[in-house]
Each structure stands twice: as C-alpha cells, then as structure tokens.
Length: 397
Image 1 (cartoon, rainbow, N blue to C red):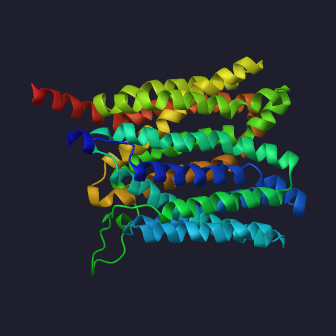
Image 2 (tube, rainbow, N blue to C red):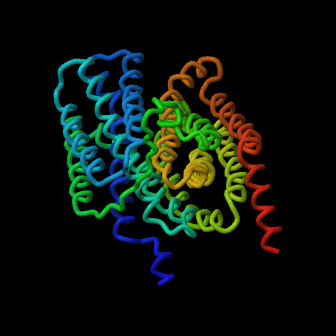
C-alpha cells in the first residue's frame, strides 16, 4: 500500500506532463517565429514586433491571475484548452497588426488559464514524500519544449509557410484537448473565497511565495536574454550553425540532471542544489560573453542548463511547499506570474542595454546579476531553510 502511495508515474501525471509539454512547445514555437511573421506579412517595425511578442505575456498574466483563485477542475482545464484551440485559428486570419495583437492577447490568456490548472493539479497527483522529485520530472516536459520549440520554429519558418506553423499549433492543441477529455482530475479546493471581506491582494497572489517568486523573476529575466538575442549574437560571431544546437544541448543536460537533483531536494532541501546552480548559471552566461568557438558556445549551453534548468524547477517546488494546501493554486499562479514577467519584460529591458554593452558585454552583465542573486537568495529564503533544517535535525536527535 505504501508503495502505491509513493508512485510517481500515474496515468494522470503522465497526461498532465504531456499537456504541459505541448502548451510550452507551442508557446516557444510561436514566440520564435511571430516577429518574423509580423515583419514579413505586415511590414511591422521592431517596436511593433516587440508589442506583438509582449502582449501574449500580458494575456497569460491575466489568465493566471483570474484562474489562480478558482477551484481547479477538469471543466476549467478543458475550457481553457478549447479556447486555446479556437484562438490559435485566429493566426490564420491575415487582417492587420491590430488584429494580430488582439489575437495574441486572447491566445496568451488561454495559455495562462490552462497552465495554471495543470501546474496546480499535477501537485495533487504527487506523493508528499516525493514532490521535489516529481516536480523535477514534470519540469522536464517544460525543458524539452523550451529546446524543441525554437528549433522547430526556426526550421519551419525557413522551409514552409507561416500558415503551416499555425496548422501545427492547432493540431498540437487538439491533441491536448483529447488527452484532457480522457483524464481523471483530482478536485482541488484551493480557493479562499470569503464573503463580506472584499477583494484583497491575497485573493490573487500567494504572499508567502513572493520571496522565491522574485528570485524566479530575476532568473527568467536573465534567461530571456538568451532566448531573445542568442541568434543575433551567433550571427555576429559567425557561429549560427552551432547556435542552432544550443537549445538541444540545453535540453539534454536538463534531462540528465533533473531526476537526480529532484531526489536530492526531497532528502536534503533546496539549498544543496540552488547554491551550485546559481554559480553554474552565472558561469554559463560569463562564458557566453567570451565565446570564441562553437565548442565554448555549446559548453555554455550545458552550464546554463545545469544552472537555470534546476533553479526553475526547484523554485517551483519551493513555492508550492511554502503555501497552505488549500492555496496551492494561488502559489502556482504566483510563481508563473513572476516567470512570465521575467520572460515578458526581459527582452524589452535588455534591448535597451545592448547598445551600451554589446552582446558579449550583455551576457557578462547578466552573469554577474545571477551571481549577485545568489546573495539575494540567501537573505530571502536560503538562510530560513538552513535554520529550519538545523532545527529539524536537532529535534530528530
């Protein structure tokens, strides 16, 4: 019986991981091609292209905020996925830039809605003693999509029409919808709706999660500099061919490390992995700023994967652990809101820095920011966990 209760690979867990993979894949596939589409189809300026990318994040944020305080159910998940399918078809309507921006806003809303439900419900399928390991395995679906999405997008944008990209996104969305229909979702009552108390910030944000969410924001901000500008940097260095494999190497290293680090977190706490991960991520960015060959570029990809890849999944596990059981949904939404903020505003802010630093100087700056965040992490969360584990150790004696 105990063995049954500690089983990770249930049908629900696998289904939720698959849905998360396809949603994330579509997100990165679209984001890696939408600016080129806007420029080619509507002669969009660089500022308009930036809005087209960023408005998706705004829609996602709205979807997460509104969904975070609701009871998570199969009905909400299916509604979100159905809306996602329908709004993906809007990309096939080549009307004007304003319509494209509106389509991106609505499409982003549905992604935020669906991902918040998936990220919350998956926690309910995991045994308490293996949550860190389970979330690490679940996060592999995100890591795979992060690597494959831009790779597929770049290949398709060079070899087929943009409409074929949108048909593929529609097909993947349809697969997700079918998977969700045949799932059994445990009901989550993680809402704290109170009568007569009015609307509070705590109704939409899990305040206990803010410290680790701020760390996640800073890390996703730094990672967005790689997502958005690596190809341009590689062109400058004449390393375009090597750069096309950057995210594949990233994915491989994440796949290798995630299962191990998840088990360590369950046994010894987050700090054991988080501190080295900050150093590895910072080192990867510093190396990226001094790349001279394809080998060093791909070595940087491995370091970034071992660093950021583990920071993102472990931060998610920590955020869930900081919330009361009935507020896991809000905790999940809060965490991803800050991730979205980093991904959404990062490219715009970083774009203002590049004229002063160049691409090599940019990655050095981001690497130093990651290393500085290590100290920030210690004061926001790290020392608290160390004290708790020390106290627990004394109690067990």
